[in-house]
Image 1 (cartoon, helix red, strand yellow):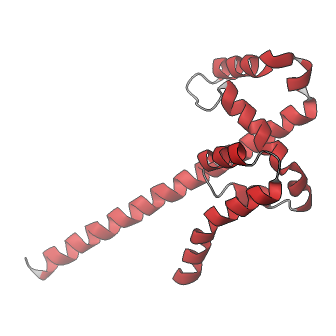
Image 2 (cartoon, helix red, strand yellow):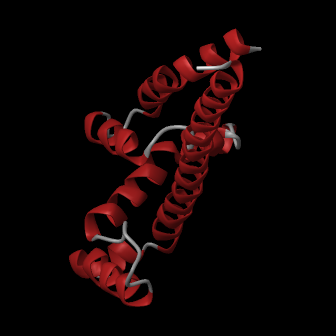
Length: 146
């Protein structure tokens, strides 16, 4: 293999790495926007008290209506909608003191939040501790790469 072939293969390898990094960044950005949507949806449900005024069928009805409006979208099951409410409810008081909190919350996947919500139903400080533990490795990586 001559030097030009080696340089070309090295370049292809670099492109592969950059492409994978771009895919990860895009996925994180999409995840963040969906989390902001779920947070705002939970806030809407909380403030409008729809869940209380329409009884237990509220989430099922909302789910059916959203699925009808967005048939190709995922994340509108009654369970997801309840988690959106729980997500907002868990962090609403902390959000009042730290408006940037939503940005921090958006740095971890929705599945992690659901797990945290399941384990820590009403202790936002404890939940934020676990959120920070998930975020910490990425913060350390940024420090080491700078």
